[in-house]
Length: 426
Image (cartoon, rainbow, N blue to C red):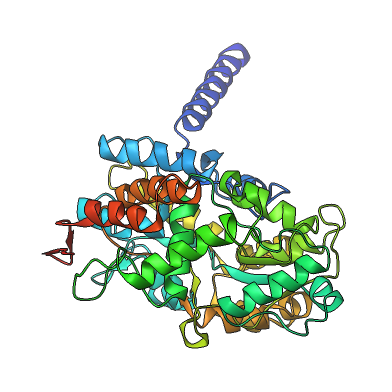
C-alpha cells in the first residue's frame, strides 16, 4: 500500500511539473519595436519593460534601433502584411498613410475615455482619425529654441533674436567676439532635413501646400526660406559648415561643447544635457527662449513631432499588446521618465506636478513656445515626399542646384498627388 501510494504521488508530481512546463511554454509573448529615445541614456525604457514582464508574466521581445532603422523594418513588414510586431512605432508623419492602408487597430475599444482624456489633447489628436484613436503617444517630441546666454552677454546682447534679420545681426556680433559659427544645424541627408525645411517654411509663413490644394513649396515665401538656409551656410557663413553631415545628436554635441550660440530646433532634452557636466562644457550657460525667431514676429512657429505606439491589425496578441501600452504609458511611468530623463510628460496632470516643476522650471518657456507648435504635413505619401525633399534640399545646400530649382523638383513630385480627396496643382 505504501509503495502504491508513493507511485501515485510520484505520478501526480510528474503530471504537475508537466502542466507547469506546458504553462510556461504557453506564456504570452509580444514583440515591441521602437526607436531609441534620444533622452534615455540610462536604459530606462528597458528597465520599465523588464518590470512589466515581472508584473504581468507577459514576455517582451524589446527591439530598439535608430529611428530610420525602425522605420525601414516597420514599413516593410506592414506593407508585406506581416505580423512580426505586436506594438510598433507610429510616427506623426505616418498617420494618413496608416489610416488609408488600414494597417493599425483602433484603440477606442481598449482604452477608457477617462484614460484618453488624461493624455495631452494635442498629442492624442495627432493620432486620431475620424474619431478613431490609432495610437497612444509615447514621445512628446516638440522642438525648442535654445541659446547660449553667456555668449550673448559677452557680446553685449541682452536677449535672443525675435526675427531672422535680428538673428543674422547678432550672429555677426558674435563672430566679432570669437564665436566662429553661431548657428548649429542638423542637415544630414535624412528625415530630419525635411522637418528642418518645414520649420523654416513655417517661419516664413508658408508650407508645402496651402488649404486649397495649391502647391506652395515652389512659391516665393518657401523659396525664401530655403534660400535663407543655403545663405546661412554658404554666403553668410554663420552656420557650421559640417551641418550638412550632422545628425541631431552630433549638432547638439557641438552646442554642448560651446561651438555655437543658437540651436533653433533642439529636442526637450537639450537643456538637461547642456547642464550635465559629464556631457557639456557650457553648464549654466544655456537658456530656453520664450519665443522663436521668424521672418516676422507674428510668424513664429515650432515643430511638434510626437510619436506613438500602435497595434498592427495583423498582430495575434492584441490584448497583451494593449496591456503593455497601457502599463508603459501611464502617469506613474511617465512621471518616472520625466524625473529621470527630463522628457516632456504625456499626461496633463504632470504639467502641474509640484515635484516636476521644481526640477524643471524651464518648462514654463517650453509652454510658451509650444503655443505656436505645428505638426508636419499629413498625407499618405509623406514618406515619398521626405525622400524627394531631402535629396533636393541637400543638393541646394551643397550648391549643386539653386533653391528655386530644388523647390521646383519637390513641387513637380507633388503635382497631381491627392490630399483630402483632391489632386494637388501648381
